[in-house]
Image (cartoon, helix red, strand yellow):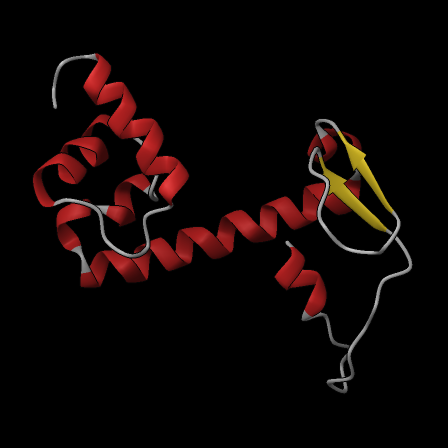
Length: 116
């Protein structure tokens, strides 16, 4: 989110610094006033719209990654921790696009269940 805010530009390519940020439940480390709204996507049209844009963008990225890494079936699971995705992770191992927090959660669960 910090990177997204720091890279904001207007239609002419000029850097834009927002006066205020509305953020879904998070606090980000920027010196810009911000309002952190729990369940913000349900309470704020701007956060809801940003959430939809982010989801559509991520889904499209997963479809492209599926062409490169078909064994993970990203086009089908969109990178979510489905049983099929977890099985692929255990069989093929993680790749650079896997979030470390996601992997930690998956691997800890697998260890607790005695799979690793």
